[in-house]
Amino acid sequence: MSDTSRPSNLAAVDAAHHIHPFTDMKKLNAEGTRIIERGEGSHIFDATGKKYLDGFAGLWCVNIGYGRTEIAEAVARQMNELPYYNTFFGTTTTPAALLAEKVCAHAGAHFNHVFFTNSGSEANDTWFRMARVYWGAVGKPTKKIVIARRNAYHGSTVAGASMGGMKYMHEQGDLPISGVVHINQPYWYAEGGDLSPEEFGLKVARELEEKIDELGEENVAAFVAEPIQGAGGVIIPPATYWPEIARICKARNILLVADEVICGFGRLGEWFGYQYYGVEPDVVPVAKGLSSGYLPIGGVLISDRIADVFINEVGEFNHGFTYSGHPVCAAAALENLRIIEEERLVGRVRDDIGPYFAKAWGSLADHDMVGEAVSVGLMGALQLAADKKTRRRFAKPDAAGTAVRNHALANGLVLRATSDRMLASPPLIITHEEVDTMVRIARQALDAVWQERRA
Ligand code: PXG
Image (cartoon, rainbow, N blue to C red; front, side, top):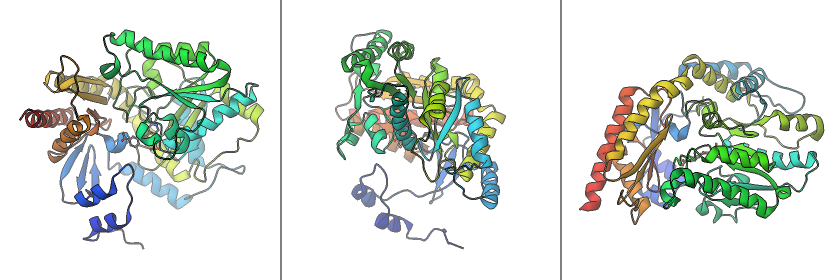
């Protein structure tokens, strides 16, 4: 039996051998890494025994909370029965087929098919190829360009990072690849100027129409966007934005791709973010909350319009992963969805904990350092401001965000900072009392940093 118990020098072992994602390794090795050992409900515990309220659900994913033994048991059962088999050569497995059925059941009548991947990045790289194959098969082979947005996040693989709008990612590895162009994001606080949020929402949505017309509708395959940008800072679009985007995609005959990797599976109080915004996409990449992060699994839902073409016209789609529909990951996802259904967690977010969170989190808007405190469901952001009246931001926005995050962490709350926005995305099972604790610690952190900055 392999030994995974913790040696006393684990931090040194990690520093010597482990390259972390999105991490300055020299800095991390100098500061030392935290070892997370255990999770229970909405809490995690580090190796020193310190307890943290996880206001971020791992990395936007542990929707059902930690320590759910039902999942461990479902996984163990599947491991013992069939730890692996592929879905390539005329075979399937019980969990893969049942999961495909269940995911589609929540997605709306026009979604009846899913292609499984291991992650959100792979889901985005998968539909990037699918979209081009689709248009080729329907006699429009020049429709190839994907329009995406600045400050979007769609993953770290080549197509995913290209469609993402993170400049610091594009700078590494000569991205974006050709065939990907970016338009502005609906970030009113930072970029809305004198326009009202509603006017600004329409203006940035119409950039899509202008870009399609500039490129030629016959050259554009798809537009991709997160219903609410996650890693970019929980950018909640003005109410005018999504209906206008949907209108334009329909009018110009381009595929609408809603990247639901974060918003999917209940975070916004609906099964999917597009349902919250009342729009009907053609393609939906998912991951994270599909298994609540217990095991890696993602997928791409395709609407009947696309599935019909793939099934009846394309023949073989030359694409797939060894672990597409992995039976153990699919078993974990199935059990996760069963729990979300049985405990009515989506309705709980919509009717109970979401409104409670909105009120509690929104109360932070009265803080001198908070420009806006916004949320939808259990996805929230605090915009830090040097002068909230003029929407002036700190000269060093990253430093302000990091300082608030570090204060919160020291006091037992995990919050994420994207530049000068503090992000919250707690497990869907978080209690009212835990929300109160989150807001109390966040306020203490804001107070402390506001004092330091003014000192
Ligand atoms: N799309 C969206 C909208 C995401 O948020 C991905 C795709 C990629 O998924 P995978 O499973 O390949 O990581 C994501 C992932 C952050 C952070 O710092 C966010 C993500 C990943 C890592 C860090 O907020 N989101």
